[in-house]
Image (cartoon, rainbow, N blue to C red):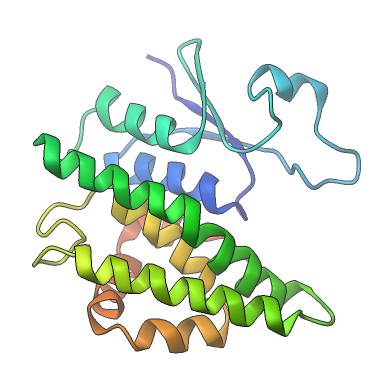
Length: 208
């Protein structure tokens, strides 16, 4: 069986989610760098891997996938290693609910409206940042309400929901506003401290 191939950039939140799943499963893989924001545009060959020109895309023994959640679930189910999804239907549904919530409400607000706006704009839009922080606060409140007793979002089992949240929140914490808001949610702060200390998190950190 050949090594899986992951196409994408190390700065990408969603590429990191896939990389975290691979790392937690102990799967060796090849990361093919692909910058969708490069001046020359998206290479034509890549559209065969992802018809919408987004990242990541994935290939394993001739089997191709795009969409991060599909890739992460495949990695969990196709390779040996610790299970990253609950076995019971309700637990799996709750995991999928959290992932869907993060995609719909956390990614845009935490990453683009707050972190990217603060880090990359010469004149950040303070109204956009303030609105993003309000949305982020709602996300963290809901995460707290759904958090089961134990070290991870589902108690004793680390799941794909933890990896999804870790990548998005990790970017949010690059700015002081993100750090301040997380500190107001003690359970989420404690969860973050645990997941940020894992080897998988360290090896997928973008080098500055």
